[in-house]
Length: 359
Length: 121
Image (tube, rainbow over all chains, first blue to last red; front, side, top):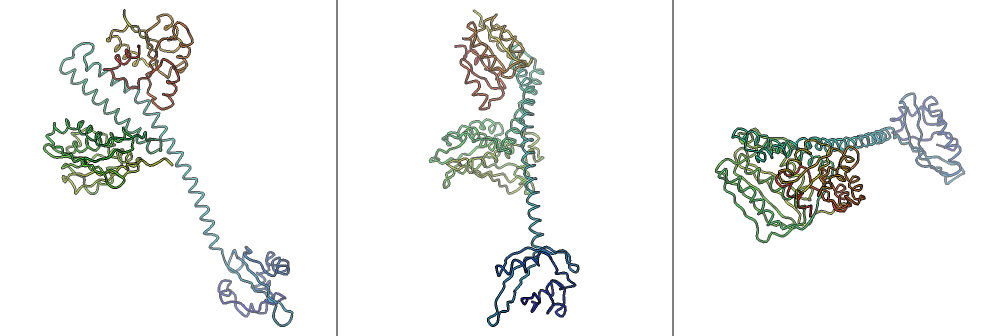
């Protein structure tokens, strides 16, 4: 533009964006362009008041509703230059159409706000869920403790002998009651882990001894099914820093699963060795295995593959998911492998020798 | 001489089960369904041990324990809290009371009387 704000020369993209022809543009006063569409108050202020004082301006945002192309948001940059000869000034005006960019930005901000609202809602729901579960499990346990307590006293024949049928029935009540109690406790544990409320009580653990002890616990179960139990625990297995009760539960869950899902006469085993800064434990069996399509579902909780064994074996379906959660809480990993149905199962988990510090 | 126990619990089933287990073990057992009844019964019968729930209808078990501690005739009686909330804060609450211990719920019917007898010394 010259110093009277008449257009001298225009880039081709200007014609394209604003849908105007050169003959309607060159030589015109800028405000008259496109049927006086450029007579924008803010532009007038920029060109007439600001530019003469400071010779340039940057990133001036102007929003205008054009008759031909609709509402646009533009970013204006201008430079006022003195010609070498003479006293005329020319003005360079760069116009950037940022309508789309601004729409994307606004959309992003909105999406971010919506996500934040959603996250808040999710946190609230998760807290409500875990509080509900904690209360529910207390309410369920109180009457259940009565059922178990009284049937235990009956079963022990504290107040007189029972006949065979009575003893059998009360034993069934007790078994079912204990099963239900285990379920409630495991559901509560899952809820605690999910709510981030399960804390580790760390101490230095003689892991070798603990693995031996838990093996003793399942030996009886294994013997009943004539299952051979093979142990390969490294002699130099170091002590680790971990939560003793949880480590016991992890190992017990895995070993008792191995016994449960291995038919009579099969084999199960446990290997443990140190690997880098962690301990790696493998629990394997020659049992029913896992079909490929069920590989992830077994971690969902309450998923029990419908095999003859699952009907024979009482379980909660929460042992494996809970074991994985507790391994992860220690900063370790738990994975499972099976070549398919009836091909056995291998569960592998790691526990770091030093537990992760709470952040 | 027969050992005397007092059980304070508002849950009838807990009361009955614990009473049965202690009677089988040779205790003479008194029961109360709330803290105020329990406190007056304690003063009247002077039991060797008190078994108490933490959640009682009229006050918390720990408050009842403070009342008993403040009375010269009952301040020496050991108290066993039977409580489900074996949470850190619950344990702290019990630890703050002299002469008190806790047994976690569910009680083990085979060892309950033995555990209670142990706390009497």
